[in-house]
Image: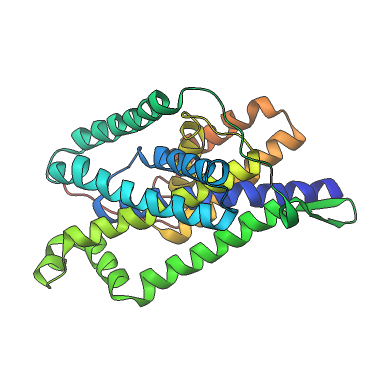
Length: 294
């Protein structure tokens, strides 16, 4: 029983990170029907910004995370303005290829400046090194911090989307872009704001991963990005609650496969879930099947 509870704690920690990244995918797709594959590399940039703040500026965890979120916000808006906005009316395949190109540019551009070495985050000190024991179950302060930061950010996101004018504009653009524009909503600003929020969440996830796993590299975003995308598809891409549910589900599956089976198979199981969900229910767990005119 203790081992099971320990795996649940580990799954929640990992699932929190996937959920933060998946929210960025699902928000952008919900607004402009774009799968932003560069999103996972914004997460990588966030990890590096946090690393440089902690290592060279000697800042603490919270200031480093806030700076990483701010830089990733600017980066996300710049990517949308430079790479995606000119292709707003282009074919989906053109936009998809552009997203992959932006992803590769960020990965290998970062590698050019910081080299390909794996870097280690500075060791945490003070309360960050503490852990709690519930019998044989160990909860580290880092795991607790990841969960708390994720919950706070998700609550803030839900508040923005449901209770603010910008959130209402986002929902209107998601439902019908042309009608929203006729009602006086600035569609370009709304789309940029969506990219800004998603990128900020990815930046926070990058710092949390750096602190938790203590290592970062220019290609660190590829696998977590794919798994976060699977989480978004599983929950229903375009739906914020679906991304949250999918993130925690994928995190739990990965941890339990590694803990009770073979860690070599954890990635294969996650990708098998993607294939299965696309065959059984392509719209995702919370999504509704919609008819499309041809």
